[in-house]
Image (cartoon, rainbow, N blue to C red; front, side):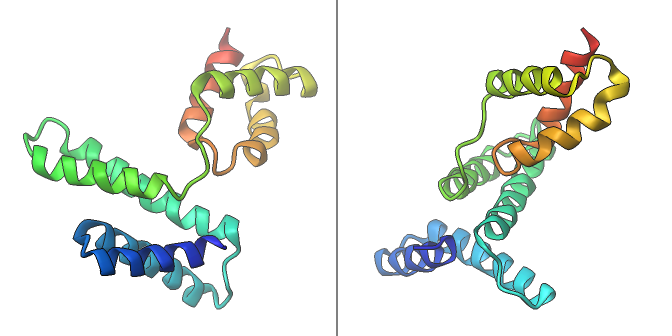
Length: 148
């Protein structure tokens, strides 16, 4: 079953069970996928659907950061629930330690040793971590490893 099919089946299930939040989140996700497909005039493959879902997850993550300290715990709780639901459809995210190990191995493979090699290193790393790690986190780990 493809990810798009799974989204549709889960949406039907949420509607049958009258799970409002889950239904709403799944409708948003399906709409986002359909919008990208309509704009690009092509069917998305699994990686494309994952990319759209990751974008939706990141939107909520940024909203959480904006709401931090605002005292709006109700809104923050709902956003966290939405992020948890979305993350069930995404591949397992790499931990910072796993990213660091990968960065160090890639540094050794391409002989990157200084901050000047950051572009080459990022270019080599990104295909390996695409969809499995946040680019900002990878960038931070690369900077830390190359600096010292």
